[in-house]
Image (cartoon, rainbow, N blue to C red; front, side):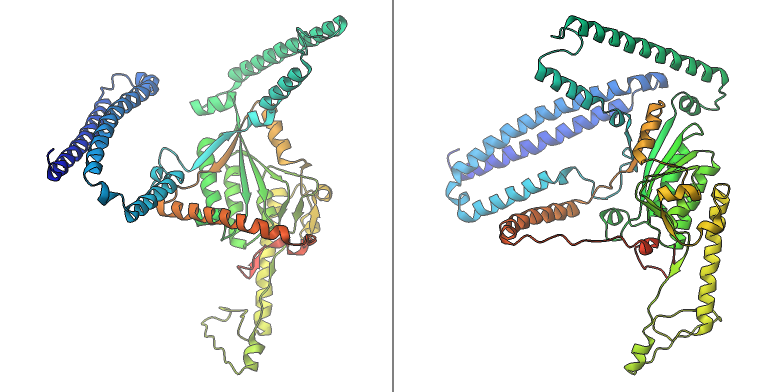
Length: 504
């Protein structure tokens, strides 16, 4: 190392050593992977039992190899960079180079903070991850963690134990001990009753598969949420399919997992929409009924028009007292600009083949025959709607009385037969959890975003945060204004969009 050229040659040699070490490390790890993959499958049952152990051992050895070569590479890189900096200090440490370095560090920090280095560029879900996520709600319904924290808090505050080693008077301690003994007796009694129930199931059940046997012993309650999606929502941008199409996939998944011993709870919130959209969603509901899987629809806010078309397919409709249901009718509305065009000397020409190819037009002149035909089509749709309600709830209500397009509160719906009982969705979930079912919430996994989209979204969030910081002092200077009072237009509950002429 007598001159700058020797320093450069030394740096190149060190960089080459680092590259070679990482390459050898990757090859060594790949050899480990192939070694595990080529293990002889002596007994598949043994492999199932040992799969977790093998995976942990493989990961541990891979991590050990990676750490060794990362250490060697880090030391080599540090030595090489020190030599290069000693030789080219004046050239490297300039304002331009420092600016470029800081820019690179900033971008790297944003990338790391956005987890871009861990995302899949394809945007498709991993086969191992699947399309759906399952969350067990039993612990959420019992609030056992909250009860334990509250007990610990109260005991810490009072400095006593509510039963043993407490500062209660002797007579109170004896009373608490008797209550505790009664709790133990009740627990043992419930446990014996559960064992007797399981024995009765074993004696009477005739399952056709191991899955059916397990669900007979421990039935499940699957919980899904169904609500209208806006075309501008993030969920629609992630998956542009309509909500009914997604519900079809969810139904297929449930048909493959659920048995006749399980129950499906659908928390429905919809004021209605397009005829074909909700007709498809109701058809998927019927698939569950035809498979013999009990379905319960819970309505906390609204299930009107097309929403009620879906709800009436369930075996039971449970609604909160002030939820809106009904609206068994069809509506269509369309503006006509023909007179405006004529006033401005604009001709509109439309050519059709077929007498009723186009009955109503936005720009053309609507004839009485076209209006009559359009109204006849709406009547046919309404008749099909009423027949659908009659086929699914005909024994519980008078279709002629309720198919007027009116919307009622759930407390009024009981006397008309539109709902079976009044309760919230959480009441229904707690009931099934108390019966010993595994209450499973089914949600969709969000497809992983491409690195570029993640970077844009994180940048958008940063800009919004920066904007809110700028708006805060400005908004503090403004005079407070009262919030506008809004009312719910019940008549418009049939649909929140005018995407199609005819809708529920």
